[in-house]
Length: 321
Image (cartoon, rainbow, N blue to C red; front, side):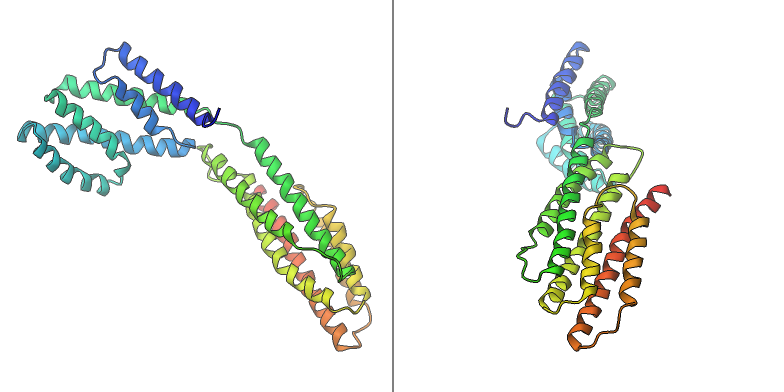
């Protein structure tokens, strides 16, 4: 059914449960407990807790300040307007303005019954506790994003493998027709992954980041390097001169395209890159300006791919820390 998401189901169950409990306790304005649930359920656990804190303290403050206002100045619309003018700056100063709407409903309850005795205060307090407690309870059940995250990882790695292979193929054949669309597609997948990863982090209350978030940062940084490399690969390929050093580096890129995954194999890849670099250095010096330009750009690409691998190496160092 359209719109029938996980959050909608939790809101429906929580709101109904809160109204039922408040009614069982014979509380006045019992339906307000359901409204509180609806207003407090957020996308993540951390956002829900933050919302509940603001609404809770704002509501308690409104009971006290509102009761004093009405008892001293009378229960009339003008006093209510003055109360809002005074109360809003207090909420802003306390940085709990997110609880404004809930606190206004509480004050309007006082205005409706036109009494600010202890029974009324306790009635509102119980409703607030029921609504916010149920919201916290139902929002403790969150979907598991592990499968989605693994799918995004696989898609990103597939795109990276294609990009690296196309780099190697393009170095061998400057006439090869490659649009570079995988660079844009990888960026789009990373952006999709980012929203899921952040949501997953915010559903774990005792940690700010996790290994999946570090992985995302790594791939973002690597993609930036690959995008820069694409321009230089195009330049090297446009210089039609065939040199064996270009073939040697193309072989390494092809090897790298076959080993794009989440595991820690950067040590092996860096060793192979060092061997490739040494082999290129041991070849004869360039004899023409065009060959010199190709060799210079190749060394730039080698440095960039070394940075690409180092970024991943740092990921595993960060995880071990």
